[in-house]
Image 1: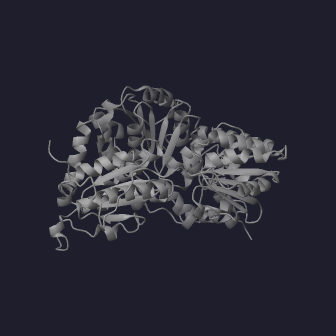
Image 2 (image 1 turned 45 degrees about the horizontal axis):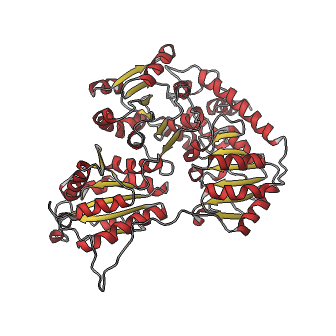
Image 3 (image 1 turned 120 degrees about the horizontal axis):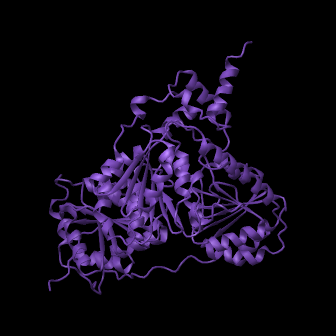
Length: 608
């Protein structure tokens, strides 16, 4: 047997950190590592997922961790253009605080500095996205230290790190035993202990604040995932209502009458009411950035729980910051909440708000649209989800319908590019969810713009891999409205501009037909009369299924409270001759931006 190479050493050392699944695309700049991964795959010690574009490798490595597949994501790409392409997916990991290591190919060491083909200064290029640790290996003795530090830093700091590997170094003989001598360091592949519990006096201070509250609101984010039971117990002890940031949507059952659902621009009216009416606020694992959706500063006493102390007090003036694991901290906090005396009417108010919102949601779903209401499609899928479904979401109007119309239950998982809010992540996320748990069904929610960005190509990857999955159920919903409708609504509501058609129009593509060409299943639906049958067919299909839903682009995304500024600007765009103005107001929907805009128009044209 030949001696292990540096590439073999890299792969084996990452395995000690629990990273055995690699997402990437080959090239001569990373050839030595790809060959090493191939040998590990043959030995049953690794898995390689070849994607169609390096950007997907970054997204998928991120989503693999988010969906619980791996403790550490790994993207493997070649030098030059490959290293550039993967950046967007890696920024998704950085902004959502997900541990990912990027393995980057590089020009051979003898050619570095000569302006050689595909030679880029990758250490400098990656100085931001992998700013916590980026290192270029030039000698085999450095590999153990570089991989251990990259993996440890990514895991402990929940961020992106990068190791740059010149092509000739990858094929060199590995040095698996670092010499004992001056200038050499010996490292460990053992992770640090998990975050613990805040000190007792801090817990006591937090409990005092929370017990004093009569109307307590909790905002839960991604950091609360895995703490469902503890969060529920604390909420019950405080008589609290709970709103959820998008990345924390799966933490609690959406059907509970004290859970108000999503918060923010795409959130629910009950979540807005919860924040405006509370006198005490508990933030758990979130730094949701929309400050206007928090209580007014000083209106509520606040406590925050986060694993990272630098993120405490970042969005709202808190009195007590508890730095620790959310589950363990909530568990330690619970017995200290005895004696809390919540207002008995608070949860009744929350339930009433939820009931009113549900009734309005039902009206919106049934509202007439041309040709199909997107909310009707998403609500229909919601009713058909299995208890162990995994949901991947792209950014755009699909995000709004996910936030408001898809009910998540215990056992389900869901995620998206939550802070970067990048289009093109939905299909890579869905693919990673399926690779992480091939025995669980997957639903991907995408707009047609996102489908054309990355989805069409990565559907090829789905076609390549689906026969290896224990459960073939993999539904891709494409909300086909021939429009970048989220951006168009931003233009109307934020700038008061008529959307620029040449920039917003999206060409129609036969998405279901493309699926058929790849050996997958699919149907186009363009009216409500066939919708139930098509949804049943999609969810029961024996292979991945593309649901091409032709939906109305003018169904408005209604903020939970419509600001006067948004109303005036939307009215302005309509008064300037927005060709979509007639279709903006969907019949049967009340309190919409369009309806408010008509009221402003009447005011503008009212006789003096």
